[in-house]
Length: 313
Image 1 (cartoon, helix red, strand yellow):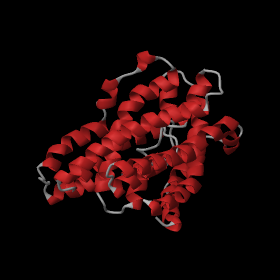
Image 2 (cartoon, rainbow, N blue to C red):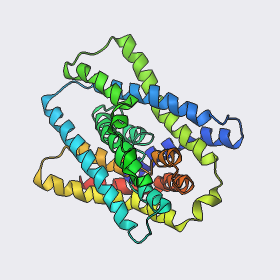
Image 3 (cartoon, rainbow, N blue to C red):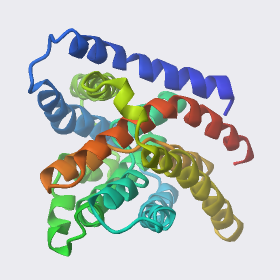
């Protein structure tokens, strides 16, 4: 993938953050604005995007194998990056700060930024979106189990049930019969579904923009360990993913689109789940917010640079 093609896609998506940032700085938004938009995104836009992607893709028995590989690799990559992040922070004493830096080093923004970024790199293609949906399925299960454990250090918070009962998973579950039986919906219905699903990119980035507008930029750059966590997430994790997938392809077949999709998703910045889980369970949410926003800003440079590696895929 050409550098400037990737850069253009990233910049265009980042431009969608501007309305949220400006409105937040102008104090035109209520305190519950983000919560309302997140609900709209998670319960309407994203589920309809996933549903549309599966329904519009005709079932191919060969593609089923790729879906299985995508699911297996998604679990392996998420767990592997957790151990990589722990290794990078092995020098720190165990505590809330270490746990949040580790979590921000491997929990990625595969939903809010993953879907719009992959859609920008593969315009109009449903196959990559399906792979991102499968990755999110694995990510949701692990983030609500391993993710909470990595932030709290307490196994009692692990919950597989929460990982399965979420809008994204349910949307995919409902769409699967349409996918396997290649039975589409009437054109008018699909138009409505597509309209709602197309809200995902702008809503996602507006939310990120609002979050950026909530803090002072000086606060982002006064924590050295936040840079290390960001480096793990934006550089070490995607490069490790790239090398692992190359080795995998030497032994077993791997769809090139799946390779690029997984690599792209793993290059995304730290996810909002870091802050969400920290706030829910009394973790170090302040450093979590710094890592999340710092990695989001720096990803404007790292994602296009990393996408140059796609020439060797």
